[in-house]
Length: 243
Ligand SMILES: C[S@@+](CC[C@H](N)C(=O)[O-])C[C@H]1O[C@@H](n2cnc3c(N)ncnc32)[C@H](O)[C@@H]1O
Image (cartoon, rainbow, N blue to C red; front, side):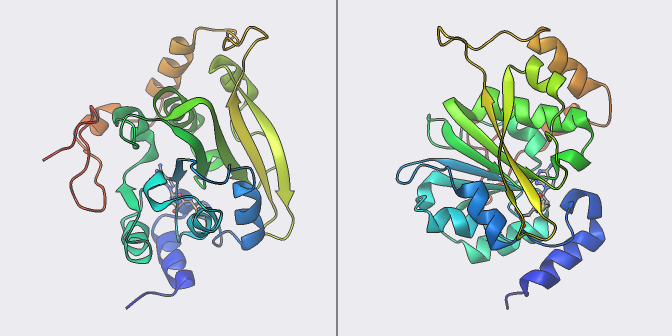
């Protein structure tokens, strides 16, 4: 029997309020805004923090093909419900901070877009930086974009970290009809006139090393935690299928 969406959300929120990071699932206005710039036809998309599947439904309605959409969700109850709701999709039950430990999700191709419902602002900034860095370094194609919503009217990652990662954040719009109203940002690589990624003010490796080592991120844990997909045969940390 399918658990009503609000009950599933409430149960996960009561267990892990910080990880869920919202009082209610996103509404249709936010789902429409965060998916509005996804090219129709052929885009490969990774959704981070899929929750009850509000953005997933909008992505499918926009024409993203089932074999071009991968969901990443840490919460086992959400992940199970997503498997029932979207049996044709690949669902990775894993911490998005493990993105640097997996291979690409599309058989040798990188994703065009990442859509994120992760509560980046509520995370330690080191964790948020590690996730965004790994998303670009490992998963997004050259012109790829990372869409993120936030309830606070500022970049979800502080400017100095974005600079160091050679990224920029562009505000895409505001979903006033969401509860609460939400801002959507797009992270994208910064290129100079010659098409090279603009150098940051500090070496990227330094910033990311500092970001991932200084606080609560236990990176040793990741190597012992293979990610699981919906079939139970996940990928090992080097990206090859695990047995
Ligand atoms: C604010 S809810 C958004 C859910 C849904 N996308 C929506 O907009 O209604 C955040 C979601 O991110 C998931 N999440 C939080 N931290 C995560 C992490 N480190 N890795 C993967 N998923 C995470 C939570 O379990 C939850 O489903």
